[in-house]
Length: 179
Image 1: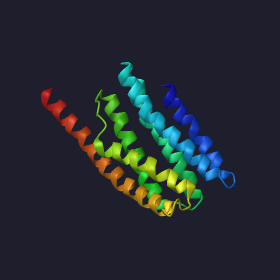
Image 2: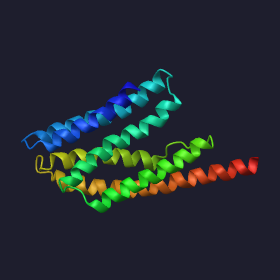
Image 3: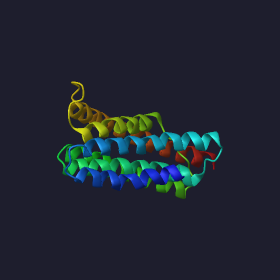
Image 4: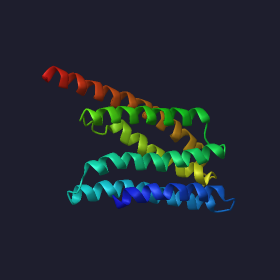
């Protein structure tokens, strides 16, 4: 849980860093973002290793991811590095899935994370640092790579949203048939 909260804490630090107009601030923000992203992997790894997985951890982990990713995307939006429509689709999907999760929790339904959702998060965690640095690196056009990857994550996000919704309704239907 400490790593989950660390991921939430680093989000406003990243935003603040990007608001400072300095030569290396994008690099510093990108490094902080990568470190924050790594806490997601380590958090899950250690929870499984030590058998300390909890409902609170399962609930807070995706929230921490969203705080880190959406905080970063919102500041990138103000900097003109991402499209408003892209941000709308990501935020809208996350709000919708948050609603589905709340209903599922109220009905004591657990819907496991799906591969598209995991790929979406991984893609975002690659795209966002590229957009923070926003300059070529060894001839590689990081802004273009980041922009493409973030749009790809939007597609994955929408697919995972459909997948999650289908999983919820399938579970509801199965439970109603069994009762």
